[in-house]
Length: 301
Image (cartoon, rainbow, N blue to C red; front, side, top):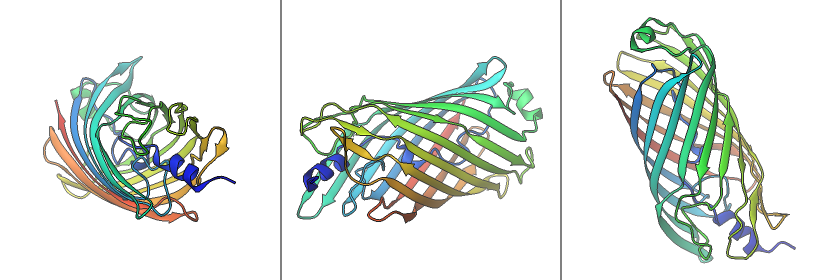
C-alpha cells in the first residue's frame, strides 16, 4: 500500500517560478514590430493547495505564495517572420502546509524561465512604420518554453523554490482580431500546449521523482474599452501531470478548469500594464484548488 508519507512527499517537493499553471496571460503573443524590447516587472500572489507551481498538490494543504519576477522580451526577424525571445528571473516565498501534520516555509531564487517564438502565419516581420500600416487578422505562432533548474534546491527539504529538473513546453498561440487599428479592437486568443518534465533524481527518500505530461488549453477574449483601457475574460483547462516516485504513481492527476478576468491600460506607446484575478471553478475529487492575483507593468523601448 502506498504510504501517506510518500504521497505527501511527492506532492510537496516541487516549488517553482512562473508556473505554466498561471497561464501566459492575455495579449502575451500579440504582434509587435521587430526591434521592440519589453521590460516587465511581475508580481503574483497565489492561495492554493499547491506549494506553488500547481502541477503537484495536496488536497488538504493551504499555501500562500508571493512571486516577484522580471521578464525581458526582444522581438526580431527570422526568415521574414516575426520572432521573439523571452527570459524571466524571479524570487519567491511560500508558507503553509497541512495543520498539525506539516507546515513550513521557503524563499529565495527560483528557476529561470525562457520562451522562443516564431510566427507561422499572419505576422510577417515589419518595422515600426510597417506595423502601423498592417491590419492583423488571423495569427498562428509556435513557442518552445524551457524552465531551467537554477533555483535554490535542498533534497532534505520537502518544499523547495527550485525544482531540480527541466521542464519543456510546446505550444501554438492562435489569435483572431476584429477592428485592428481602431480604439475598439477585439481579440480571441487560444493557446493549446503540452509540457513535459525530466526526472528529479535527488529527493529526500533516495528515490527519483517523475511527472507525466501536462496538457493545457488557455484562452482569452479581450476588448478595448477606450484608447487606454481594455479588459479580458480568461480561462484555462489543464489535464494530466500525475507524479511518480520510483516508477509508482503517487497523488492525483490534474483535471481542472479556471476562469478569471483582467483589466489593463495602455497608458501610452511605451508604458502599460494589467491586473488579473482568477481561480479554479471545477476540478476532480481531491483535485487542485486555489486562486491567483497577478500584476504586470510593461515598458517598451
